[in-house]
Image 1 (cartoon, rainbow, N blue to C red):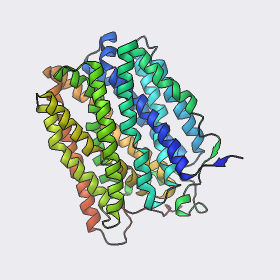
Image 2 (cartoon, rainbow, N blue to C red):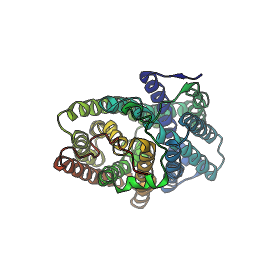
Image 3 (tube, helix red, strand yellow):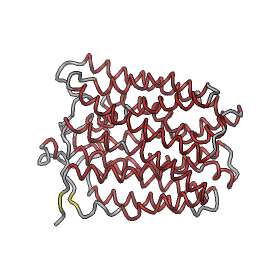
Image 4 (cartoon, rainbow, N blue to C red):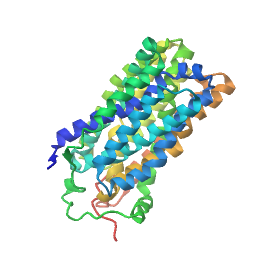
Amino acid sequence: MNRRLSPSWTLFILTGLNLFNYLDRNVLAAVLDPVQARFQLTDEQGGRLNTAFMLGYFITAPLFGYLGDRAARKWLIAVGIAVWSLGTLLTGFATSLAMILALRTIVGVGEASYASISPGWISDVFGSGKRNNALTIFYVAIPVGSALGYILGGQIAARWGWRYAFIWAGLPGLVLALSLLPFQEPSRGLAEGLQEHIRLPHLKDVRNIFRLADFHLLVWGYVAYTFAMGAFAFWGPSYLQRVHNLAKSSASLFLGAVLVVAGLIGTFAGGFVATAWRKRNRAAYALVLGCSTLAAVPSGVLTFVTGDTTVCMASLAATVFLLFLSTGPVNTLIVESVPVNLRSSAMASSIFMIHLFGDLWSSQIMGAPSDRWHSLQTAGLILPGALLIGAALWLALAWKTLRAVPGRVGVTESRVTIFSE
């Protein structure tokens, strides 16, 4: 009989797997310049490689979200990890642009399964008082995994070539895909004591998510945020190489260090402070989102207008810290904004929207004016503008929450009801 994991071990394993999720996702950015040189790609074509990943990721997310609320989640997770790891590994053997595009799409499909399902699993073993802290720890994998993608990708490429960066990034996941299979997954609604009352959702229930006004403010703010984050994650190493003349390995190493230090501290600080603040202010999560993103706008502008390398690095680190304050609260709000039997669907719906309208095209949108103006630096000023839009939407959500009638269930209080039959 399968053993049941403790909440702590569940979080440890899922966070470790999430680390490889973001490592494999970001290794391409670390080796983008040699890939472009090998296949003679313009910046717009280089951006298309990220678009291919996003197509596989966001298009299949709704399917995995729906299955994640109805089927055995550990098998869906195992298949997802194996698929994205194999796609990453085979990218190291690509012989044409078409082949890389196809493989990056496959990586996106595998990661869609994991990203849609894992937060709901965590929410079923941690109650509302501990859920935000647990999800904050889970999403620490974003800065750490992304940093490892930059650092390891850049260092391996500098020593052995860009192909080996993909091969070594993809290999561990082929083994780790099996790590959850020996264990029993938690019942849906376990943390709320509702496991006996949970019914499997239907498609009409998923559609009802889009009737929730607060969900729209939350996710559209996340769209603007993701637009900016996705474009810079892709072009960041190239920006430092071209504008500030850093070596490829140095640019990747610096961005990796910033993500590890500023991203890690920001993620923990934002998550744990928001949890404590929410005990006194029901809009705390939304206020953390709006205020931190608004504060990142001026530092983001400075990153792209300064010609001083030291100032650029300092302002970039400050921007990363401020933006990662949102990581835990935004994902907690997503799973708490819907009935407990729709958590995977809510996460998948968010993934679909933030990538379709956010970073699916942002790397190409930034690449196109860079080609036209021959300036990646000028093109980068698009990104703080997107952050300003995201901050405005999240502050509107906070204002709406503060004005809501006490006792009303919205995105700042866990929604435990089940949509009616």
